[in-house]
Image (cartoon, rainbow, N blue to C red; front, side, top):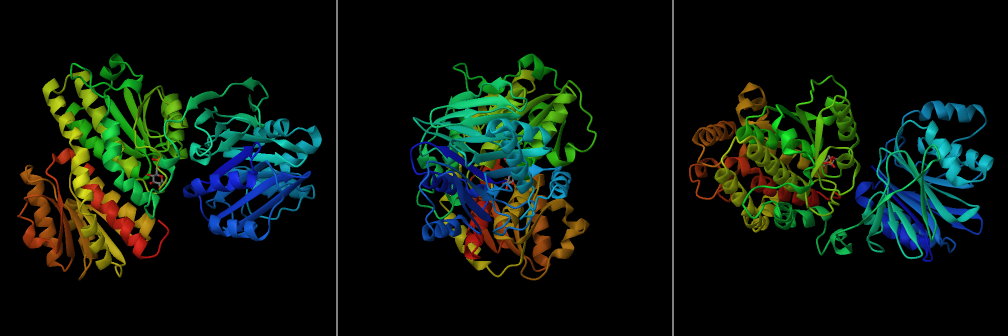
Length: 601
Ligand code: BG6
């Protein structure tokens, strides 16, 4: 994933583009570059490393004034993160500059073709191939929009491309296939971005594009066409959050800011879900109650943290509705031969709504005529647009790469879906459903009470800066929480971490336990004795082998005290809802440990 910005207007393009890149730095941060159209030439610079390296270079070597430009922050796919591989890439004669997000799958064949006709490529990237092809077409047709349409028809894979032509200082041309691109509509200026964060400081009016479309922006206009050249329309919308949501608000990292936003995000995701009669309503769902009544199997597909939200959903949906649920990684689902029928509901969970594997998986499901419901945080993104229905979470923009508030609000959406299915299918009484919604409505306060213990969790992190490995144990709905806790440590603290179902421990993983190894244990609420007691005996077992046990247990659970080397208290909540509070200390722990280890969270 990379960040892309384009601008045409009356401001200095360098400033607007760099500001946009700063807001998109979460999308890619191993190199950055800009290209401006000035005096009939492309002026450009690109640097390996963080955006600050590029900014320093631009300060030392002022680029000419220009009001049209493009920029890019990269997360390397083809070629190492060095200066030559950074974007923008130029065509053979330096007339066209291009930035790209995605992967051009047939780039090797195209590269061979270019090299055979004498082109020398300076980088190892797939992008440079597209830049050369684009320039050839611009030289042939004299028009960047037409050239983009022609070149896109030759490319396979997923891509957003944004380009400028040195002979046309008034326009920027972009294209998308299976990769995000949004237009920002200003007054006498227009913008392009991988997402609205790129231009939210300038305008909240946006336009989304369909697959396989080309868009040309000038200071005064936006025109859209298909790759085949046929005129098309984008869909305009108003962005309902503003610049403050895209800033760190006094926190050191977006991740930490977003962890602390969770009470609000969960509360917002619950707003407006009940009718005056007390029934559950899911407005944007678009699937009729008749459709839902026919569902006899649910397959949840997702990636990363969203997949772990799906695992929690399985426990809730099966318990409340008795509909069998499978949870599968999107990257596996799309390449096997899953059994889907018209009465299968496929639920795609994706914070961004753009994850390529999840998108391909829902397309696969729709071809088999299954109904697809998206659970998504990004309004207007591709996955909900290509689904039959959607439940939007209301986390606000999630800029931290490691999902936190996105995850909690996905859990809320999953609970709501489960309860709604129970309501429609009549598998639970209305008052029972109402009671769970009441409990959900108390969750923002419960999450806030866990956040109030952040200093204790940070102290635990300080005690573990020398640790090379951490294990997480959970049972029932606590098992996915253990997996999520481990993922967070891997993803941002670069530590070896594993999550296990506590009952599986004896079947091998217990061999990993050695003296002093930290094991974080998510203890189920005491109400469910069989789960709780089994967990407690698992904790005794690892402790007997020398593990250092850090237990997350509910207030008042004294049975755990003798076996806990450290204890974090959780509010008393039902076992199915416990992930909403249990994951929070694990997020704080990972964020703090990563910070102490000097990593860029
Ligand atoms: C990963 C992120 O790249 O994508 C995870 O680091 C996230 O935090 C995963 O859970 C899936 O993303 P999405 O947008 O489909 O939920």
